[in-house]
Image (tube, rainbow, N blue to C red; front, side):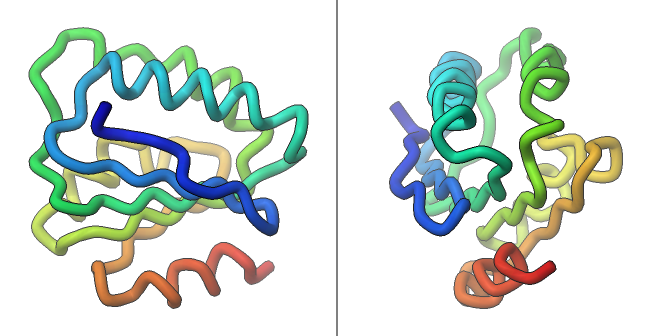
Length: 120
């Protein structure tokens, strides 16, 4: 699995994505996140792309049903990774079309991303 939840602290669900991200990985990650919401309440999401190699080819990436279930419970989302993934990463999470702010931070800006998530 190239994606896993590594922490659920201070209302922030931290996810690490490495290697090639596949649609089955996304489904598993989404299900784990949905399971956390009743325990955590409204959450912020921190996605860390480490040694990331992109997304696998799969027609199912267009499925946005998770957004309908999860968006009311998400306050903010920060993505941290290499600059070369900025545009595709923001597009893949539907930045600008979600009911909460989404921001991208470069790898060296992890602390800045966390601070942004904690701010009102």
